[in-house]
Image (tube, rainbow, N blue to C red):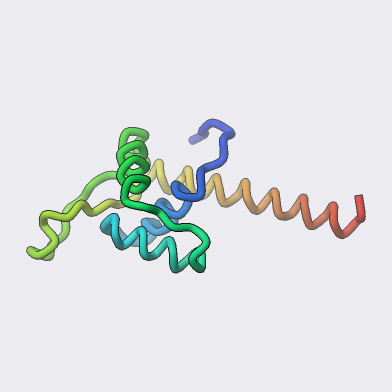
Length: 109
């Protein structure tokens, strides 16, 4: 599956990354993003709401439900196959950028 050549924003990247293995609530994604980025990326609630709504429209994530009765009212998000593909494409794109950069720096060009 292909997508536009536009890179993902950091917020989109981290949201998809946080959902790679397990569904999460928005607040959990916000906390995990801060942890993974060592505090360099902070997703606010407005950004979170807009990003998740947009990614659901694109089919990259979907809402799911928790088995925990205490969490029934919270939105829980999970990655779709399309979202997984988008994230993996972005990771390949970023790796390629790093490889090119390292080659140029090493060669002095």
